[in-house]
Length: 201
Image (cartoon, rainbow, N blue to C red; front, side, top):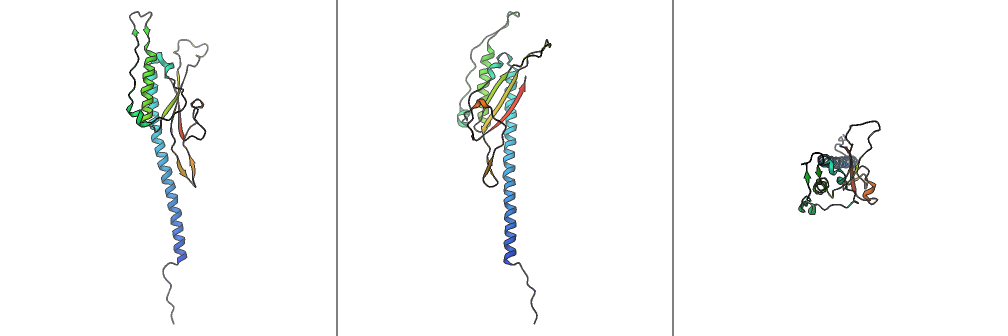
C-alpha cells in the first residue's frame, strides 16, 4: 500500500507566516509615520527660515529702529483664524527731515519697527500652527583698538509653534525641537516646538 506525499502547509506554518507578516507591517507603519513626521518638520523649518530671513531684512533696512524689533513677551499660542483676518495696524505718524544734512531728523525708526513686527507676527501666526516668536536684540561692544567699523547688531529669534507629536514605539511620544527661550515662560511639558536663529546685521 502506497502512502501519498503530504502537500500544502500545516496550520503552524500558516500561523508563523502570519506573525512574520504582521511584524513586517508594523515596522513599515512605524517607518511611514516617522517619515511623515520628519517631512513635516522639514517643511516647518523651511517656512521658519523664510520668516526669519524676512524679519532680518526688515531690521537691516531700519537700523535706526533696531531696538524696536525685540519681542520678549511670554508664550501665548496664536489662533490661525484670528491672525488671518485681523489686518496689520497702519504705521504711526513720524517725520524724516534731511533739509539740514548736518543735523537730519528721523523719528520713523520706532514707528516702522512696530509696523514691521506686527505684520511679521501675523505672518508667523498664519504660516506656523499656533505660531509666535520670541526675539531679543544685542549691541555687542566693539573690540578695543578697532576704529571705523559700524556697530554690530544681533537678532536672537526663536520661532515657537504647536508641537509635532507622533506616537513612537509603544505609546512613547517624542518632539523635534531646539531649546526654547527661558523668557517665554513656556510651561514644563507644553507641546511646542522651538527653532532658534542668531542673525548678525
